[in-house]
Length: 139
Image 1 (cartoon, helix red, strand yellow):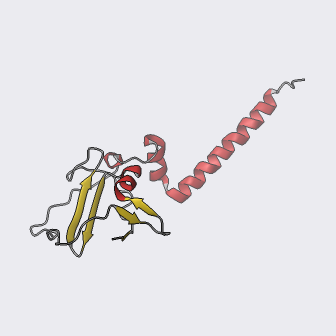
Image 2 (cartoon, rainbow, N blue to C red):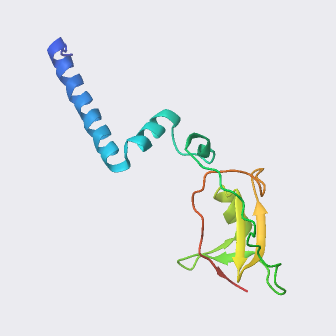
């Protein structure tokens, strides 16, 4: 009923499996680069605090920094936004469901809206992922 696997068959199977793993890893290194592969293998999936593992350089603050204008009169954030494809979503629900940590809206060099989530603040450090989302305001 059950066939006994011989050592030769087990060795052949393991050699094929190891060859496939080496081939996949070689392709991954070729596409992503060895440093990226090393970091993923060592630290796991990319997370918001991965900046701790990557090289960085400190930037010196400008002597004359750009400052956004005060919020212009008449500008306010809508409660509902229209996404690409015509669907609408509650802005607060959309931000929370996407694990947003900071959300700023700038219009005509004026800071219209600024909100932080998940315990983050204006001075929190984080890895940057999606930096923009195009929405149309509905009135």
